[in-house]
Amino acid sequence: MTVLRSILFLIVFYAVSALLAVGLSPLLLGGRKPLMAIMRLWGRLVTAMLRVICGVRVEVRGLEHLPPGAALIATKHQRMFDIFGSFAFLPDACFVLKKELVSIPFFGWWALRSKMIVVDREGHSTALRKLVTDARDRMREDRQLVIFPEGTRKNPGEAGDYKPGIAALYRELGLPVTPLALNTGLHWNVSRGFVMRPGTIVFEFQPQIPPGLKRAEFMRQLETSIETACARLVADDR
Image (cartoon, rainbow, N blue to C red; front, side):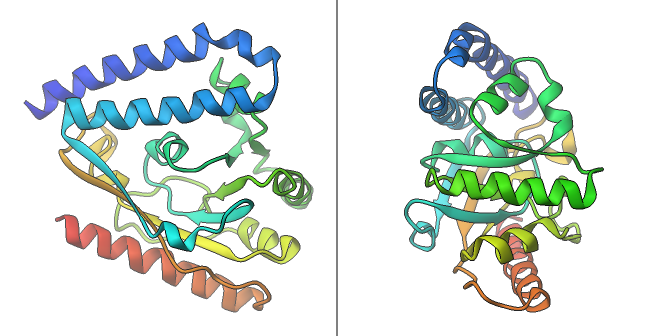
């Protein structure tokens, strides 16, 4: 039954996503705010479909740790739901995306027009400088900048490999960092297949890391906060 429900969900998910992305594509000619409103609607629709079709609830914890307005969020990355699920509860999310994603028709166009930050991972120092410049611009718009410090998806329980991008943003923006733990990999596309396992997906904000720490201490605190909380969420779910 879980497999059949998962197949039904994926059919409905891709149909609704295509309807919104293609059917509302004329909005790409306008401003950013209507696009973000559609993305928030998309996130909420997907969240509702998960609950109704697959028996997967979504719970957001620790919102008291998320500052109002501009925010720098560092989060674990397990499944693609980490991105569009977050649209449902972040007021004005801006994700740091690898440049390969913007070549995807419609997805890439929406990402560019909504002013997500695109990073060329082969660009090294040039890419890092552009990341910081773009981040400063987005902070002036009071957006929630979300970065995956590991740079790629990991399975639940898999050890982290934290990259320097988040340290550069932390240093140059002078903002606190809000770590975000999650357990999406236990319920969305289990084992990176197509099965949606019933239960509860949890997004859990952790206490902020204050600005001004030395790089090594900041990275230590960030990794400890995210990895410890994720391990707890995984253990509580099994």
